[in-house]
Length: 235
Image 1 (cartoon, rainbow, N blue to C red):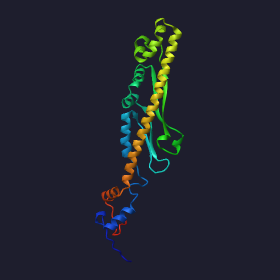
Image 2 (cartoon, rainbow, N blue to C red; image 1 turned 120 degrees about the vertical axis):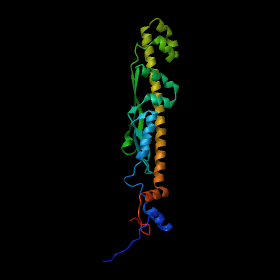
Image 3 (cartoon, helix red, strand yellow; image 1 turned 60 degrees about the horizontal axis):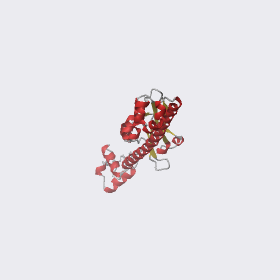
Image 4 (spheres, rainbow, N blue to C red; image 1 turned 90 degrees about the vertical axis):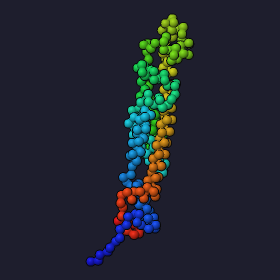
């Protein structure tokens, strides 16, 4: 039986060529099957919650192919937080109607048909279900002047004489105004969603590329006390 004595080196003890070989032999060390961006994903879940997208499920693919990208979906969206982020005063009237219990908005980010194969931003979409409860409890004299002054001016006489058909038409006009606002809100939220998806992907891609860099590989080899032979092969 022969015995072979092998000198064991830490990464720092290797010569220049052996270090290069050690790095090349461990190119995937930070990107193996167990690779994940859990820390970044958790950070982004917190960021999304600040915008009103609560308990978001974040999806990503950094394979540099057609399906690469990032997205998120959630059915728990805080309209009031989102309104602060949008900073558009025209939606304050929706806030008022919600607070008075006159309408409900069920906002969600959900998957579309592309989500079975990909997870980029176009695999999700914004949806708003609008429930309207505006009825004769609505104070026409007090609130209509503030909420929809143009309608108040158009229907003022019919309101004064209590024209039943005229007032019925008025409530239909109020509903149409609210529906237009909801449609515009849906488009604005969708724009915000897509921009956030781009930011998520940009950050995840940057971190992924760093983990595959020589600097990150060296950090891992040193931090985990990897051992090598004199040619840079891992022992």
